[in-house]
Length: 254
Ligand code: MG
Image 1: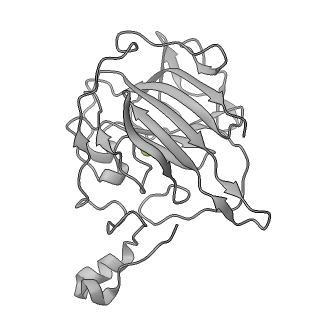
Image 2: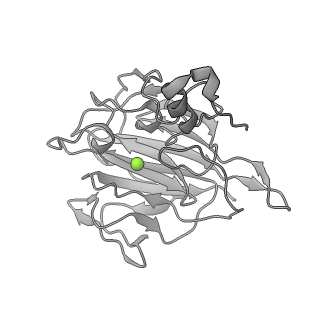
């Protein structure tokens, strides 16, 4: 993967200064969080088995949340702070981290933004799933809610917009099914291959074995840090009242 930056001369004047500050990534000519980047096309997802009730985990999965408790998680160094009620976990009090570390894996979760929540843009129902505690796949209401494409639901935050936007309206449950591959490292500590993920959002492909360009960050280009092994899966508290159910993961051997 390579990175480049717009030149001051190519863009010219004050606009050039802004462009220089907004470093590009290798996905084309778009700056990070560029509102001029084309919006993902809206797709209405088909009905799935979990549209009327929470699904259940496969027999070999590590169940992270089945509606009863959040014992598989911690918030900071203690117990998970989120509220559990009526089989639903609601964001409060900080990010959730799995107590168990994971590398390559298949992850399923179901999420929704409450129907009466009035936030917009990046505050329109924001959470996210961080693999290895570093690489975020964005959770955000995308139904009649416009934001920068590389921060919309199903994006690799600040890197790759989703291929399309199949988000359901607030009040309805959405599903994520993610196949994640951890980055690999050479013996000298350099990156051998980037982290990757395939993401199905309400059963619709939105990331196809896409590579992360590095740790996901806000408003800047990314790069990979030090080599790392498996780590917690983190679910973000972005202060919006997201709700979750039926979270499970199947480790894939690395
Ligand atoms: Mg987020």
